[in-house]
Length: 368
Ligand SMILES: [Zn+2]
Image (cartoon, rainbow, N blue to C red; front, side, top):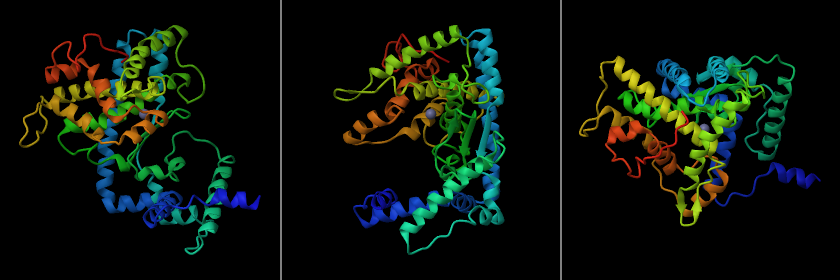
């Protein structure tokens, strides 16, 4: 019994010293996440971070606005479902950047008051970490729940990471400070930022309305968002994407799973469509003026799509791809680019893809 308990606390032996160091670093990062967030922000500069957070705040508003204006154009949505979707969008809370409390040393000291760490004793540190986290979780039961507070996320290690997310159970979108840098967030040109970062934000918004999101209402309560007719029509429109992705061949005989990846693919399509609308509107209101890149002669629209594809540039081994297909609910990077772009009429227009070519098929999937 005791050995089983110890085994649960001790990880497998790392194969070498480098991996042992990496694991220790990761565990320290997870345990002291708010401290790491504070160090990250101070390294970037508090004022510079604040300025970027303000810019992103504006961008999120632009994306939400574009999503809102696109909703009435969806042929599969009834009037009842439309007002439910609008209400859910209005109630969506977005947390951008980082919780301010992490920059307050008194808050940090109080937060970690119970965590006694011994630099020479790994096992007792693991026990401390577990009991510390459990204690924090139990305390939450005695606190009044206020939806949408940054402090609820302050302990999370994701804030300095490059990963935005949407929480179905609270209707909250989190865009952490770690994301606000190239190749996602560029100061200029805006085409790249709308194409890369704008799409990520719109992707997360769309999760509130993907095949899982429509099971929850504006407060994140398990309660169908739409009427039955809209739900049926939405699934019918989604089937096209499901079939399209199931046809993507990753390796000989290995295909993408159109079912497992459906929610993410729906969000990718929503992300692209909404960011396209938002950038188009932004460009129009700025007299079609945006910065250019030196030495390359691309239009603003072409740069937008390059911005979209750039963060997905990657090379994977066959083994890695096989594991990805089974374990990951996202389609492989390459198909996250090819799938949505082949369904986008604006993409074909920007790059003059002939009708009937791979990237401009005659029959396209359209959900959003
Ligand atoms: Zn997603």
